[in-house]
Image 1 (cartoon, rainbow, N blue to C red):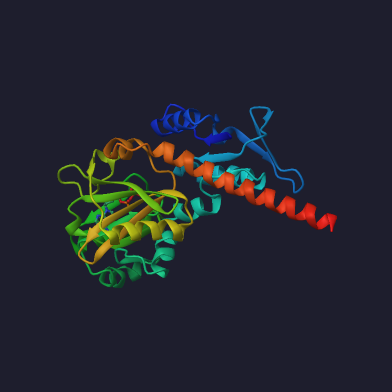
Image 2 (cartoon, rainbow, N blue to C red):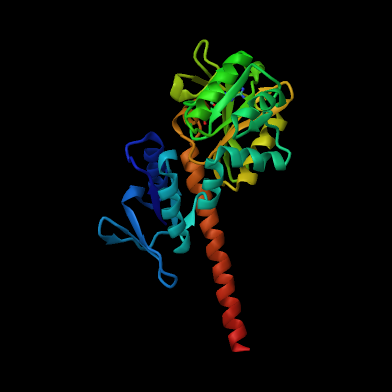
Length: 310
Ligand code: ADP
């Protein structure tokens, strides 16, 4: 197979591991800087060019699109889809999961456990919204934040009100959330590939930080999931429509609650915590899917030929 990896940096651990895993299984891999891909969006012959060269012959594409390039990155991925190149995750599923508010609404609709979450536009509605999510302490989240930046714990009602007012004054979109104190500054990352949790780890924030992000200095360790946690992670991946993702959840007094579903999960933390070859599993998944697509194309062609004869 010829596989494209959309990544802005070929030196990143996850990108290197995916290249290694694909090459070890006999595939040809090319890393493309998504911002240097440009496209001709015509209905008959959609194409992508890269630094002056027309890209052809790819069987699959692995999007590793950072949050800051979601708009352009998903447009490029859509173009690959138009060219019938199999995407590890579809552009529409990536856009869906990148929108924190939309994700929470989609998951809530399907009955997935979530922290009580509220969203408002007018400062006059803050008071009521705070009481609807159960009052302070509560968590305030910038919708555009990633890696724990823009996630604030307001310990008192007054603190919550002033932080919300400040964000609203800056026209920032925020949601407010029940604080899951019992999680104790830790969360669980479940790596889902093809509707299965293939690895999981517990991440613990640094002393005194309620955020467990590894980017914020958190540490990872192995954890055994309960069947409920496992099925919640798989269902969350299915609802978002992601073949491969990292599902983050907290252990709350009312069962597992989802934090977010990440469409480009980092492989370093989870591979070293679990000792598993996640990159290899991802490539195997692509092989399986592209093979079944080929088989159904062959079947269709045979059927058309047979019909033609009759
Ligand atoms: P980001 O997308 O920026 O990583 P998250 O919503 O995942 O933001 O929050 C970062 C971390 O903060 C989570 O992994 C979790 O440890 C902690 N956290 C977030 N929301 C809550 C909450 N409602 N209750 C307790 N801890 C939370």
